[in-house]
Figure 1 (cartoon, helix red, strand yellow):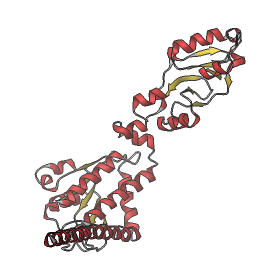
Figure 2 (cartoon, rainbow, N blue to C red):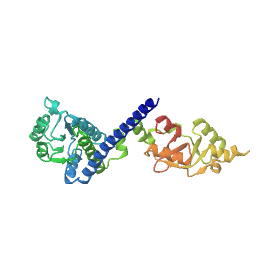
Figure 3 (tube, rainbow, N blue to C red):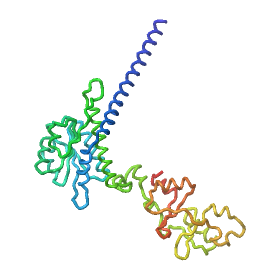
Figure 4 (cartoon, helix red, strand yellow):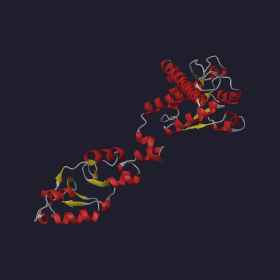
Length: 342
């Protein structure tokens, strides 16, 4: 019995030691890569700015419609595909061209209006040779991302972004880990710095992200609002019995009140009806019951921001007005829910 207990205790101890070792190994990788990123951030210099100048020129007004061509072999290629996708989604046309396929006809995808981002940690990737020659022949700007300043790729590039000399993570230090993380992060840094230089907005971002939760959150109120004959509107000189008919028939739980010039001056809600309930309520003028100066929004407001405002103020419907405070539409909280904004 005691021998069985001892074996179990030994097994548990060994399992605990293994778990501790595994966690240590995982933390060591993350710490090594984090340290490399911090070093790279501290060493960014004028070459980074020169690369941004090349990228900005691709979409500069009056200078054509060039694209960013990203290329790399192996793990560099996998990272390159993501970098190309990030640029494309932030307003810079970009695509990945496989260096092997480039040598068999895909070089025709790279034009004199384009720029190339070539990735190779060693800077001596043989498969990039034909692409580099094509770039030099047609004087296409090329940004190199490499770990060796004296490499062929760095020397042939218009701008070379050199990764810090940091070891790959892990005891063996062989698998591309730290280098690919730095490359991916550098691509993100270029893309984000470029979009900020260009003044890329949330509205621009939505153009390239119409689907999914992100696209829905970046919807504008004009995409959701009801307008024209759906608007529940009455004038200030009408009686409350007419207001109730409008509120009931339009199904928004409220009615906007407009003056003789069509400007929104008030709102009558279900809550107003309850607060002013009396025997003569239906014979009273709307102006006596309405809430003056109601909360409104513009049609260009972000749907997510308006929904947050409605939740904060505990209102279920809000009028959309133009610059002259004339109603253009109305949006109900259910419209946000149906659109998946919430």
